[in-house]
Image (cartoon, rainbow, N blue to C red; front, side):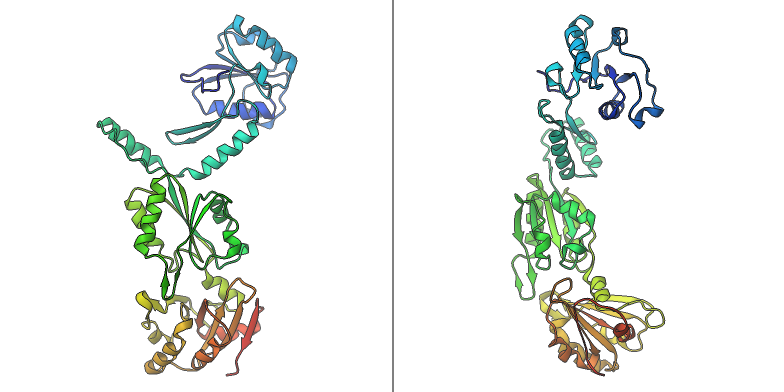
Length: 415
């Protein structure tokens, strides 16, 4: 029984039937260079309403000069008749869901530019073949045209020693922690990952969504405890992709917000690896809304500025603090919890009003989520009511939080 592709050159094909099964076959054939004639007593599937169909009962006059006949009518007696006469009329036969009347089986095909992957179960389980095809499709890079064009050019120049970086890297924003804040696009990406390199702030709920056979690697970067340097992570991503794996780099929040997405994506792209970047829900905005804070509240804030209090090697970043003087915006500070005393001290030196409304939102997206609202001069005290990781929000809009609903625990300190 031939299970290999037969249409090495364009063929003349006759399709019998105009139902759902016939529609699936017709769609695939129309994507090829083959000539297709359709014969059916009646049109059942809406797909055929705008397609030329010969509305007749099948007869052997229809198979004249045909290379391939596909019976998708579901009529087993017709399949048997075609099988018994196929050599007489010189055509190859496929009868949908009737393997015993098939000269060949159709395969579930993935086409990715010039790459074509076929999956067959020998006619035993077409649906399963389609399932495997969909998995393969999810793993293959979506934008590979340039890669294949480069291979063509290099082969034309006589270069046959082509190192194929067949894998890809998905830089996935996983949100603040709960799977409720995972985007559908991120979920689809997570389901296709073969190797996962996971940051510290990725929630357990999300890690549990990874495929069972996925290799999980902890590449956490916590203050004062870096398991791997960024260059080492880059090299690991590259090696796994070059070995042909679909690698998921799982990042807390959104990778574009202090998520080292540039370092990794630029390095991998330069190395010839296909990279896909997937946004996530940032703790900045999830935290503010959960705490009842509207950073761009009309009449109180003309916008929002996102900064980090933490620089490389645990150094404190204070450049943003002077902006707090008569500042018409809300400042959202990441990685500020451990620097509460330094922030207050620097603010006093800069002459910032110590009555500026401020809030810590900690453990965002968890059962321990806590919002502490106070003023800048009480920042150290506020920190005692929560724990890290936490987002610090400073500005007039914070004072209006008490009027808003909130999630988790909320503590409001007296002025």
